[in-house]
Amino acid sequence: MSTHHHIDYVELPATDLAAMKAFYGAAFGWTFVDYGSDYVSFIGAGLEGGFNPTSGRPPRGGAMIILYSDDLDISEKAIGDAGGKVLERISFPGGSRFGFVDPSGNELAVWTKA
Image (cartoon, rainbow, N blue to C red; front, top):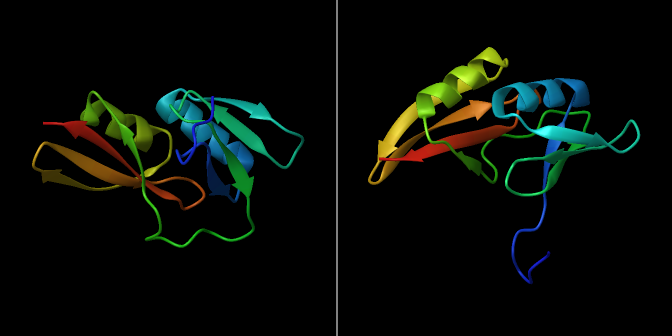
């Protein structure tokens, strides 16, 4: 159910739909629905979304999507094993997080409570 002024859907730019599905499926267990050959929606991310084909890599430093993890070490290993580039881990009052770059160049992060 959509709620007024709440984030309802997220699209990530994708230079390679198959690589994105392989990465997010392996790293996080997401599943997918193909809408023809030009669009893929993802399921299991906690918010509906999809991969929007693009010819160029997205710029870094834009809006940040942050996933939650019960265990950062397990998440970090899963991301690395799936082919993602893990960035620096930082701690902050109440928790810690690390960033990662997916196969299309999108930068996201994963955090956990302290």
